[in-house]
Length: 194
Image (cartoon, rainbow, N blue to C red):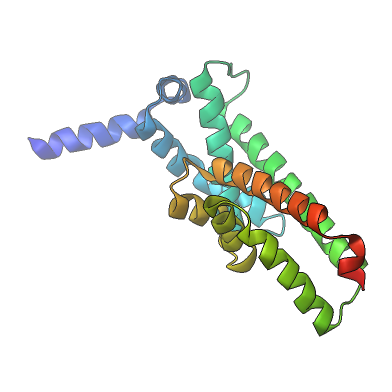
């Protein structure tokens, strides 16, 4: 009898229509979100994988896209005018394009940046370290995890107990801005170029 019940629930889950899944997600049903995650995983990660992305990048982009979708759906402000998969696909595509643009900018900045001698690098690292110590504990951890330990936003969110990767990204942005302001207020450009 229990086996029949499990089979029935599993069959029902497989047959769930997009409209039913969307309705459940709008009501905050996390099981429906898990179902959606599994259902479209291969399709959505293929966007990144077929456009010079790695498996990890594909997973991160898909998770970020679902966070965006979840937030819009649960806010009650989302009206689907296309298939749910099409909507999520477009979010993935936009997020991946932004990531590719960011990577391109970083690559260009690396090419444009002057070559520093070891002494210059050490002096810059010392200045950054001093300013980093002046930040609050959370900012110090976020920036250290991201820039020095190369942790992903998901790992940072998990380590620091943030709600999701978007919260971690926002915090990193704000902390980086604080660090930049500290450095600019305490040092001149010549401190970096001398």
